[in-house]
Image (tube, rainbow, N blue to C red; front, side, top):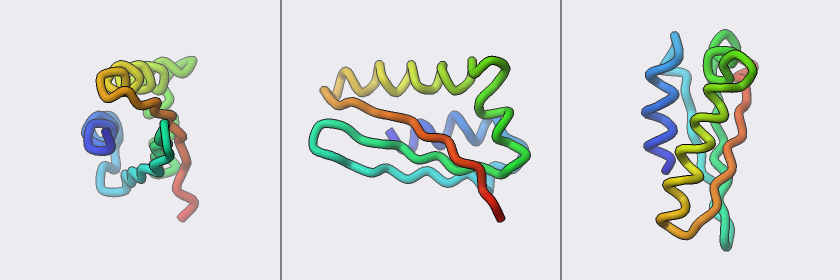
Length: 79
Protein backbone atom coordinates (compact mmCIF):
# COMPACT_ATOMS: atom_id res chain seq x y z
CA UNK A 1 0.00 0.00 0.00
CA UNK A 2 2.88 2.31 0.82
CA UNK A 3 4.31 1.87 -2.67
CA UNK A 4 0.92 2.53 -4.28
CA UNK A 5 0.48 5.86 -2.47
CA UNK A 6 4.06 6.87 -3.22
CA UNK A 7 3.65 6.17 -6.94
CA UNK A 8 0.40 8.15 -7.19
CA UNK A 9 1.71 11.14 -5.25
CA UNK A 10 5.05 11.31 -7.10
CA UNK A 11 3.07 11.69 -10.34
CA UNK A 12 1.15 14.67 -8.92
CA UNK A 13 3.89 16.82 -7.36
CA UNK A 14 6.64 19.12 -8.65
CA UNK A 15 9.23 17.83 -6.18
CA UNK A 16 8.90 14.01 -6.28
CA UNK A 17 12.24 13.52 -4.52
CA UNK A 18 10.77 15.12 -1.36
CA UNK A 19 7.87 12.67 -1.10
CA UNK A 20 8.12 10.47 1.99
CA UNK A 21 5.63 7.74 2.81
CA UNK A 22 5.66 5.90 6.13
CA UNK A 23 3.25 3.15 7.16
CA UNK A 24 2.38 2.69 10.83
CA UNK A 25 0.87 -0.77 11.21
CA UNK A 26 -1.70 -1.52 13.88
CA UNK A 27 -3.64 -4.65 14.73
CA UNK A 28 -6.55 -4.15 12.30
CA UNK A 29 -5.64 -0.90 10.59
CA UNK A 30 -2.68 1.02 9.24
CA UNK A 31 -1.95 4.73 9.06
CA UNK A 32 -0.14 5.94 5.97
CA UNK A 33 1.76 9.13 6.74
CA UNK A 34 2.49 11.16 3.63
CA UNK A 35 4.99 14.01 3.80
CA UNK A 36 5.45 16.32 0.79
CA UNK A 37 7.17 19.64 0.11
CA UNK A 38 5.33 22.71 1.36
CA UNK A 39 4.68 23.89 -2.21
CA UNK A 40 3.17 20.52 -3.17
CA UNK A 41 0.56 20.18 -0.41
CA UNK A 42 -2.10 21.92 -2.49
CA UNK A 43 -1.46 19.63 -5.45
CA UNK A 44 -1.81 16.52 -3.32
CA UNK A 45 -5.01 17.75 -1.66
CA UNK A 46 -6.51 19.24 -4.83
CA UNK A 47 -9.41 21.65 -5.19
CA UNK A 48 -11.94 20.96 -2.45
CA UNK A 49 -9.88 17.89 -1.51
CA UNK A 50 -10.67 15.87 -4.62
CA UNK A 51 -7.15 14.43 -5.06
CA UNK A 52 -6.83 13.48 -1.39
CA UNK A 53 -10.30 11.92 -1.44
CA UNK A 54 -9.48 9.95 -4.59
CA UNK A 55 -6.28 8.56 -3.02
CA UNK A 56 -8.23 7.65 0.13
CA UNK A 57 -10.87 5.88 -1.98
CA UNK A 58 -8.22 3.84 -3.79
CA UNK A 59 -6.48 2.72 -0.60
CA UNK A 60 -9.83 1.92 1.04
CA UNK A 61 -10.77 -0.27 -1.92
CA UNK A 62 -7.38 -1.98 -1.96
CA UNK A 63 -7.53 -2.42 1.82
CA UNK A 64 -10.84 -4.24 1.50
CA UNK A 65 -9.12 -6.99 -0.41
CA UNK A 66 -6.51 -7.32 2.34
CA UNK A 67 -9.22 -7.04 5.04
CA UNK A 68 -7.36 -4.11 6.52
CA UNK A 69 -8.37 -0.48 7.13
CA UNK A 70 -6.05 2.26 5.86
CA UNK A 71 -6.03 5.91 6.93
CA UNK A 72 -4.14 8.57 4.97
CA UNK A 73 -2.54 11.48 6.84
CA UNK A 74 -0.97 14.30 4.79
CA UNK A 75 1.83 16.41 6.28
CA UNK A 76 3.82 19.26 4.80
CA UNK A 77 7.59 19.19 5.07
CA UNK A 78 8.67 22.11 7.23
CA UNK A 79 12.29 22.12 6.02
